[in-house]
Amino acid sequence: MSEAGTEKRRKRIRINYRRAACTLTLLILVVAFLVNLLSASAGTGEGYDSSLIREHGSLDAEAPKLTAGSAAMYSLDLDEFVYEKKADKKLPPYSITKILTTYLALENLESDQVLTASKNSVRELKDGMEMELVEGEKLKVIDLAYATMMMSANDAAIVLGEGVSGSEKAFVKLMNDTAKEWGCENTNFVNTNGWENKNHYTTAHDLAIITKHCLENETLRKIAVTKRYVVPATNKNDELELDNALLKATHKIKGVIGGKTGTWSESQCTVAFAFRDNGLSSVVVLMDDTAKGRIKDPVKMVKFSHEVTPGFIVTDSDNNVSEAWVKYGAVPKVPVYVKGLRYAYPKNKKASGVKVRTEFNKVEAPLEKGDRIGKYQIFANDEQVGQGYLYAGEDVKRGWFLSRFYVSNSATIVVAVILALLIAFELLTRKKH
Image (cartoon, rainbow, N blue to C red; front, side):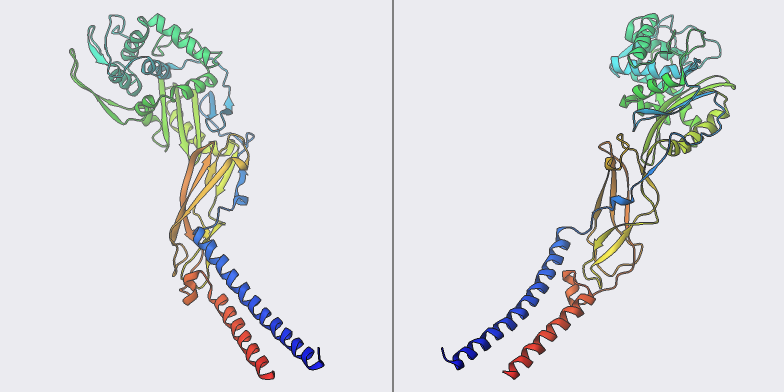
């Protein structure tokens, strides 16, 4: 090949390299653009920043001063006791006894089954709460259950026990057998209603276990937190309106899901209840308490529950937890924050046991800081334990034309400059050749 031909080919090769460089630059811009667009199209937000989940709560937390002589707190989330105060001391449960009576009745009888008050059930118990049933009076199981739980009717409890086992004595055996089956080693019942007897006793530890199991019955939980109920007229009596003693004792607490009170005098009071509060579920038992203490102590225990139960803070108001894609925005993403503390208590006591699911709205500019743009859900032990809203962490102004493809104004400027330089380079190179 002649020298002229060789030089001509070298020139052609140089021109091809130049064009290849331009093409590669454009290709990189297109790929970056498509990756951005596809990422935004695949989901409107990023996942929750799991590094923000941090440990909270300790079994060594300082306990509050209680009026109650004996107490226990059982974590339903962790399935273990997290606090006890003289919890193995044998004490009279009084009318908390009725929670087990009602549970066994609901488990063994149909709600609409009709029972008849016996001579034994209507015997007078001095100063005790009663429906004032009459021998031969007929009532449905569900009405007796409401009366037993809400007004703590002693006669109704006896009717339920006899309805299950045929006699109060036989039913008491069932109560004791059930308690032992649940692992209650320091409990002995001699009646269905908790009437004081030296051989009728339990402990805060055992009573927490009993309460836990009893509240697994959905109907019982519903009854336990009913504010008002009317027992229909019977063949012997007019209708009877009931108020809820438990709700009166725990009126300062939100999230009570069930329980029972017991009272013998102003200085001999008990209460057992379960509650849910911000990702935490627990059973609290207070025994050997006073009437005033039974109002104040539950509040202290609920407040204490988050301090003593090992778990995790999942959200707080001080951190951005994610990012969201913004269509038509001067920037393609906006930081996302949440409001308020949220907790979770996984049984494995590990952060890996906490899952947060985010769900974003269709986020479009303009945005103002604080605009609600989605929601989140917190899961532990395969159950949802919390939820809340996601908020824009900063203002986002309306963007230029390419913002509809999630391209920021600054990126648009960069692309424009690169394209202008490529065109200029191409034109200058052509003039030289």
